[in-house]
Image 1 (cartoon, rainbow, N blue to C red):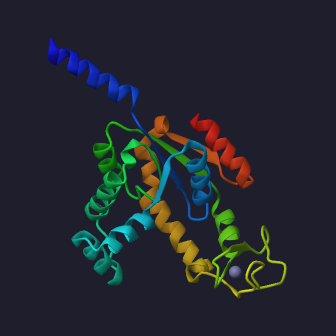
Image 2: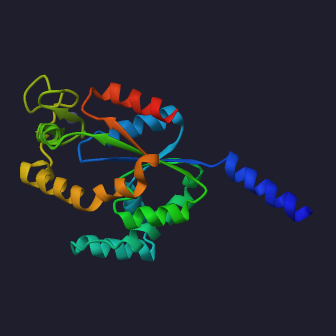
Image 3: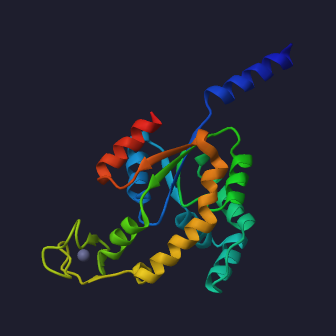
Amino acid sequence: MKFLRLLFFTFFSLTLFSSPIIVLYGKPGAGKGTVGAYLSDKLHLKRISSGEFLLAEIDRGTPLGREVKEKLEGGEIIPDDMICSVFFSYFEKEGYLNGCILDGFPRTVNQAKLLDQRACDCDITVIHLEVTDQEVLNRIAGRWMCKDCKYPYHEKNNPPVVALTCDHCRGELYRRHDDCQSSIKRRLEVYKEVTEPILLYYGQQRVNHIDGQKEIKEVCNEVLQTLQ
Ligand SMILES: [Zn+2]
């Protein structure tokens, strides 16, 4: 009887308190960073981007972090198992299993499967920000950044008052080296090959498609409405 009661209680705690994990998905330049920051603020959930958790592990100098660093420096691809080990240790240490927003993870179907196994008590919702390749090219090709204070500009949407000069600190503006047309096209190809199958894996039940071409404020509101 005691055991049954315990089982009943455990079942209900898991069902009632299953934590939301929101996976932000979309091409480079689709607006994941902006939407992620907005959701984190509105829903009081922590946001992790794949780049940040890898850097955190490297900074902590763990054996795994050192291995990742070696591979990155050698230009090697980091295997899924290694990415997931790093990610899950970070995930659990920071208490992210209680709910979070993921940006840039999972990046492959295998990583998505491992996340499902690890976070089986969590409710995983995927937000797919849809933008055309042309829109990505327009957005990224127009990006500039201040060398000194890192403030972002866009030649059409958010130009500086004086050309090539930061409004805030008068620093010089530059383009990121991977923001050139050929590099963006390569990133779009990789996205289609490796990450697009994840949408198929998650299936219609878990994926919410949002029109990411609209004005960013409108996109943020629409995503929030979808989640509530
Ligand atoms: Zn500046």
